Image (cartoon, rainbow, N blue to C red; front, side, top):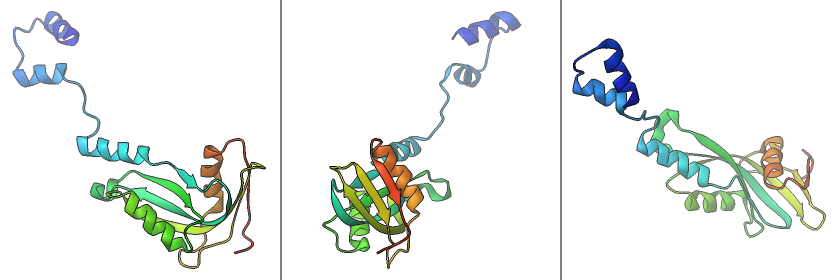
Length: 157
């Protein structure tokens, strides 16, 4: 209302149309409610979820809201579990867990996680999804495990 009263005093305008008053006094709307909920849903997804130790397969996944057409915000996540024998098992589990968000596999590999020594080694590839970008995977894991030594290699399966 401060802006409105300043406007009235400065220009000595006896009246404003009701829609002009509404524009001057309303809060700006940056995102639609659906878009805010979508973005909030993406922000709630942990970037890294890997087993606490051992050697296991992992996949890099792009997660986005399929309802947002071509303007969807997206995040990239890393998932790796010993319980999954195949990269596709990891993907199926993650995709089911994150519904209604949509997932797209970006590739896979293996992780050797030595929690006692605070070391993680990222290497290999997925026969089904191809080789993940190990450097991108390493960045995400380094953010989640800042005190660890993270190494990558294109060698091995």
